[in-house]
Length: 259
Image (cartoon, rainbow, N blue to C red; front, side):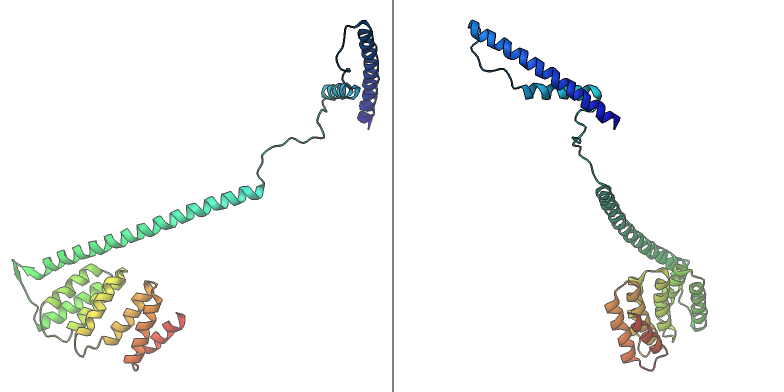
């Protein structure tokens, strides 16, 4: 309040000073006119002079242009948050893409490594002194049990090598189709579902195999693991249709209810 009183008083003084200045200037201008020394237009308007002096006083008091806010370019917190969220979204998308690429490369490397180990182990275990040794009837069962033991120990590559040896023997053994099935199980255990599908499909090439419904169930599970739910449903429905009395029918029905 006191500040406003002081400002009002100063403005009054300025106004009085300006009026005196204008009056003097008017008289002086009249004298010049009478003497013929000045023939121009009238002096500047007294309001313009007063306004200029008022501005000067306000500037000296440190309150000039106080009522005129400065124009600045600013961003609101909402704008900053939106920009930050967009940047986070972009980075998350890039990370997701790179992660998928990395997973694909990892799967390819694991598949190639599995094939290399399979061939090396098969070569080492099926050749003695440079000649191939086919298992006999009794040794076939022993080797089959050994391969199952390797599978149960999660030594999948070694198990695949033994199953390959038994399949390559050409022996007409009742366990040959089982070898093919468990070879698919090894790939399934390794997470190589595409190769597992190929191996399980080969089971159906053996006439009267007791592993048909087992392989059919696993085909559905492979596709389900690969997020190919449409194909998984088709395989489970095929099991129910072609093997309705299978011990796996209830499991297939349960999986279908989840898809």
